[in-house]
Image 1 (cartoon, rainbow, N blue to C red):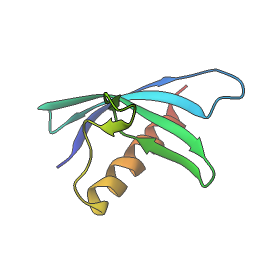
Image 2 (tube, rainbow, N blue to C red):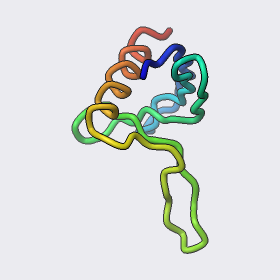
Image 3 (cartoon, helix red, strand yellow):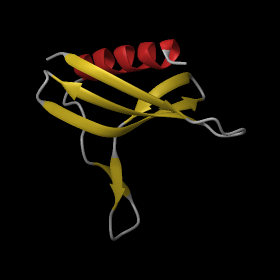
Length: 85
């Protein structure tokens, strides 16, 4: 699996932990939209797209199945964020 495109839309909002919205394309075949880059207690991390259930809880609608893939995605996405203007 390879991320073949990353588009970063930075959020310029003071006092917000949300730093950017990100859209990616995987293997030139699958688009995943509205990932978020969050500035958390331990630095930047990537939050997967999610939606609110009827019970008020948020559930990821797309997510990596294992830690290796999550780490690879997060590394590439945060690198693109840091290089974005």
